[in-house]
Image (tube, rainbow, N blue to C red; front, side):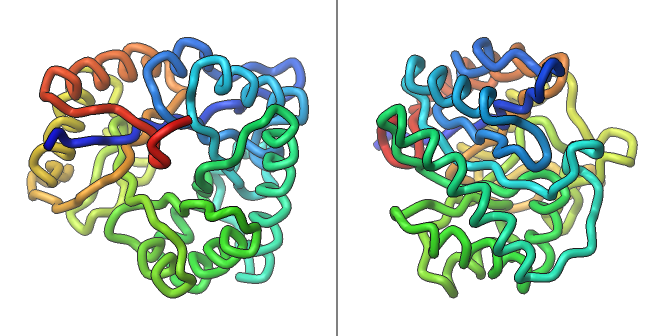
Length: 256
């Protein structure tokens, strides 16, 4: 049986007159879109247009809730309580769900963004708060989060379906966490290297960490960030390399 993998990308991260990335071109190569919900990026018009583009391209839609931090693009650690994480996520899921429903689309998944994602990955109380918001939003949503992290435990404890995620364009530490963006080499800019790493992840269940050690992981989805200058080429080469290895690209739900 052929292996199947979801390719996701963080999209809809424009705000007002400010533009981020090339969403239409990236969306040609992915199967799921994580749509910014207005806290770290995005606005109502951008959310609507991104959902419409996903419908046009046959791409599944997920919510991408983040910290209320437009200035920092949601990548600054903010001291938050679990009840705040719950409220932030529930609010943002609801906003995107209404927009998606207006275009006949059901949300597939929820993936926290940036600093919120990393905090949840290492803090079970925050991961549980995010998972509870996903559960209480209803609709059988899938929680997507870092493989081998607190996300998996939170999903299990709240009875949610879970999609373990790995990253095409981020370096890993030996413990399976991502190298902080503040450190050299944290972001991979070479499309060929990114493609090779993803094929290793999907076909061998491992990735080489920055120190040369092997990290074991079994991802159901691979993230291709949409906000780097190489985003489109990385997405293209990753998809081509996976398909050449006999891997089928499909959304987590099996259809957009």
